[in-house]
Amino acid sequence: MHYHFTMYTYTKMRKSVCGLVVLFLLCINPRFAAGEPSGASLVIVGPGDAMYEYWGHIGVTIEDDLEGISLFYDFGNFSFHADNFYSSFIVGRMIYLGSVTTTEFFISQAMREDRSLILYPLNLGTEELRELEAALRWRTLPENQEYLYDYFLNNCSTIIRDILNDVVGGTLRASTASIPDKTYRHYTRTGAWPSVLNELMLHFLLGEQQDKEISAWDLMFIPQAVADAVLGLEYPGRDGVVRVLANEKIVLKESTRPPIPREPRILWPWLLTLSIALGLLWNVAGRFLRAVILLFVGIPGLILGFLMLFTDHAAAYNNINIWLSMPTVLLGLIPLAIRDWKRWIAGRELVLGWIWTLNLAGLLVAFSLRLSGISIQNTGAFWALYGPLTFMASWPGQWLKGKFHLRLGKFGRCGSGDVKQIRTADNGD
Image 1 (cartoon, rainbow, N blue to C red):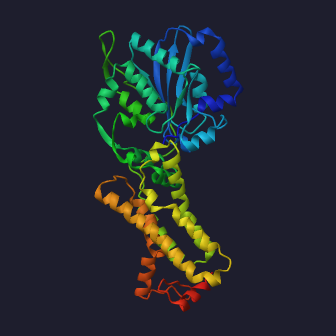
Image 2: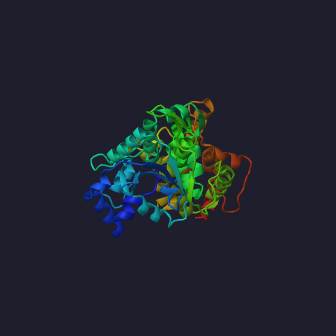
Image 3: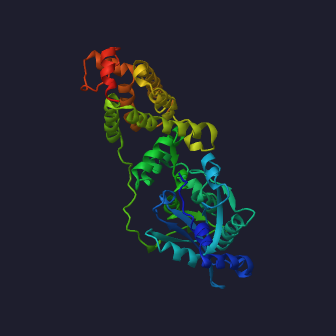
């Protein structure tokens, strides 16, 4: 989703003289690159303002009490100023970075924002601690620090989850993989609660794969889920001692933000109302407003079709919303753009009616796929958004309006073929 994690260590350090000094020390001072670890903690940062911060952030600190050093490792770093960042994002080939900085520097940056900051001290044996430190160091070496980002399967949270799982001998996965949970769509929508428009956009773009039931292991694409899983987790150490991986949390800062809701907001009543209003408007509006309605329906479908056919955004694949918002509806802009519209008014209404009828057929296809179980995609909100508008603008809707003599005043349009009435409708332009 998860196009969504913070970029503290990369972007802020690029803009900070202090950050540059830290990077310089990491490169030239041997004590920053080697030493005997004495402790480790999982660090969880709560949601932030930006969309990529909605789901929080995660990192691990490694302490060396002898040298008085504490380093912070994380894997959620990117820069808007990187070469080809936007083109790579568009085609779904986003390169993220593993990074290391001093814990003090990271915490000082995090404390400036209205985000929660919690530490979970990790109870690790000597061998496990060394393995954790070695794995983190290896993943942040210049030749290893880059990775191909995936919203749900390979992000800053899943990388740390996998490292911790290896350190405790697979106990983390064994204890969570069989626990059923909800879906990626569910947690994408609840995480996007701060913005209804962002939630609606993500809800529309996610394909049916995100409606499959996930496990507690999969849920750890969210940072807080990793902390919840390690808290109280027992594992056998290399020395034969059974330990609890984490049994306490230290709250460094509490956010004033409202908590993430357990359930996503209900969208369909508002979208249904909007669709009915747009359907009524289509029947009385002039060419400009009709063009706006066509763009409202067709552009989302155009974007979705591009993501499905030409990008690596796998989360958007197999998305039946393409049937509801078929970009062919944009062809209606052509008859609306004809200047000599008085001569072409009857033909224009005929063409527009059939263009909308094609989208109505697409909506019926999507409904059939869902009703038959061929698709499991949760798309009811978008049937509410597109259904009434599409029907009212299509030829079946226009015929039904004429059949029951539904008049919308002197500016109303009718698909009955009555030339006199069509000329009356022409006055609405």
